[in-house]
Image 1 (spheres, one colour):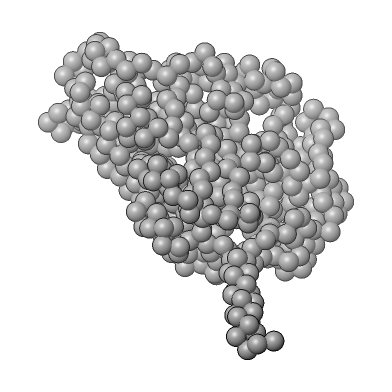
Image 2 (cartoon, rainbow, N blue to C red):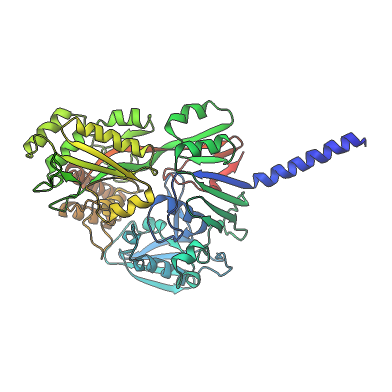
Length: 520
């Protein structure tokens, strides 16, 4: 064989080998920071998405939100208040120990022990009043009253190794010592605010990931995230900057994955305190009473918001105006509720009727690195409120600082995005009367309370017949939203950009899962 031909073949084989090695690594640009590696510490999407690679729950959901088996292969209600879950046999934790019912019971108990959580998972575990490891692979869970959605609730509670976690500290999670799950990937490394590395779990019980190594780069600002994709520093990004959608669609080097998501953006309003910290008269003096407790004021704020303009201009079409807390197609979405019509004159009349003909001053708070164009959304709403006589200021913070302050009740009007696979779940967490004993109202920043809403949500959650549950969930949503428990803005779209040669199945829950990226 001529030397030149042998050399060319050798170079080709070396290139193919290098390409194959590179193809086994996946690099993803994330739009939001991961604040904790403890899978039970705070119930927010960036943390849940990351934990899903390392840990698993008894049940899971597919990209369309359909419930399916996870670490449990089956479940059934053996009486109105008792559920039995059969565990998958032979599942190994990352340290080689086998998953057992004891690990499940420990994991379901653990969220209630994390008393300093800024967003606890306890709304999913509080309905369970007793837990029993019947045998090594069978768990029975008792609820105080009939509770139909328990299997879906348990999709949100990750199962950890009791042996690895029972004495673990926050540092043990940050260093990876306590990150012992059953998921398709193992912990590789964590550089806070910069990157997280995962490696393939070769002993995974399910379909093995195609990627040997996954690197998540934390790129919360739009421009650097897009630049990293265009430069080839990452293979995919989530939350495509709205201004660059058309540009990427026209670029043959990339493909886009998009779909309407489960996430709804809305305003929480302080409805509990007589004096609320960020509402004053126009001279900056505290008002004698909190105007947000008046339903006419809440309605006026809603009427002052031009949702169509917000969606078309600020979000560049990546959303639809909302009247509900949950998106269309989700259980409990009340079709009869329609987005509030933009009516600035009506808003002024309502303010006058409530005793504020000249308006007042308030500050809108929101994150600046969590949702699509979130800072611009807050600014746009402030401008709209100003047109009806409300002097609105804007303060936005990074997600890591914002959620803790909002949950502590530091704000008067705060922006939140929420995704749920059931309306009664969302209502329980977001507008249910706050009750630490039951876990209700765990994300009810405004401390809204309505006994009728609570009764309807409780009845919906107790219903085991799907049609009845749907009806009750819709009725609960209607009562809460006609009372302006929160002010819905829009249902957000989810989008990913992926380099040519890789495909991604877009998910309704907006989660970015490395194992669902596949080479083409």
